[in-house]
Image 1 (cartoon, rainbow, N blue to C red):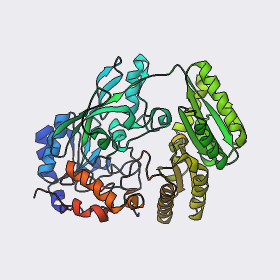
Image 2 (cartoon, rainbow, N blue to C red):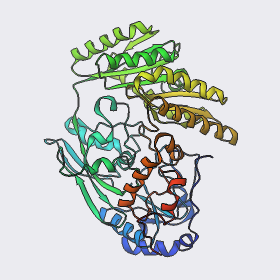
Image 3 (cartoon, helix red, strand yellow):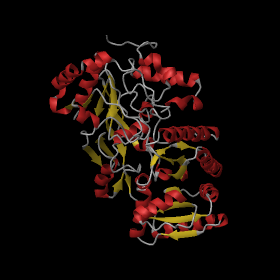
Image 4 (cartoon, rainbow, N blue to C red):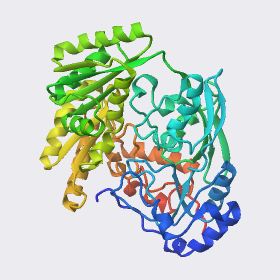
Length: 490
């Protein structure tokens, strides 16, 4: 695997496994430590299942104070830490290391405060994304970010990767829906950034934290925006004879000044497997399908859906289906939300996550097909078309190492294409180890040096998720403890 290179583990730390476990157990309690091999194996990978590493041990804190004690101990003893939520990362962001502790916040999952009058909720970071909306929904509110994994993924991972989802076109991604966080630095210091208000004085440190991939600290609590749910919402299906027509239609909808709640794209392979799995009512005689959802009053919804149908007309849609009731709407979204799992039933796949300018959609969709065909691989495209966040699923056989290597190479070519047309390497999955060695495609050595200096300010010993995000050729000295401004305990 081309991206899996990690620093050599510290055998001295590994040899002290039992001692380290006993020390941490005295700090926070023994039952919250997993040291046996079978228990640790459950944490050896994340949703990017091509890569596996057994962690030194696993710690499951229940409070911010316990997180602080663990990090202070690890800082004092130069022990690496991998922060983790539910492990749904698709870029290897939560991949452990043999000489690193996995610090999993999944037991920190309470709603601490909810204020409907001021439209915020304060929650622990191990809560699932969907659980926030379930609690807010009791009063007709919701939490906007909705990644496909929202039933399982935790807010911790959403914050780390700045996750989005189908409805981020209108409501924004995680960073647009968070007001403040409580975070523990590597030395155990507990800090509050932002809070239950629209803006905070001083530097905008909150923007550093969201999307920092566990590199700067461990977020234990967050204050998130909750929004009043719209009066109603309905999707429509637009089927096209070619991906290029669908891509051009997306650009035309946005160009007309209409901002739907969501515009989702699927190509023929994705349509077929999703329909077979979910019976969503997708047309099977088209090469590309758009799911376009709008919201508002019933009158507003009808006006918008009819206007979108008019905009689509010049691009020759073969199928136009407007949802007529809540049941049909639920089936349409059930198919989209189950897409990754549906594809996984028929093939192993490598899921990419690049972002491009909307005007480049037709060109990029064509090139994705050509790139994958060049490696002898098939691809299913499922992505957030409204904001240009691509999720091509490159199909391969994981039992054939040569196919796995080709899938990675095709994925790297797709990401280079995204940057070439003015986009970026990741929209919501993060960099992790998957895109780490492609960072030089997007950033100069000076850019990377500045980013690494910021990490060093927050984590001088480079102990937090250290072998992620930055190319090892650039960050190796920091990880080894020899970078500028570093201090590592003996």
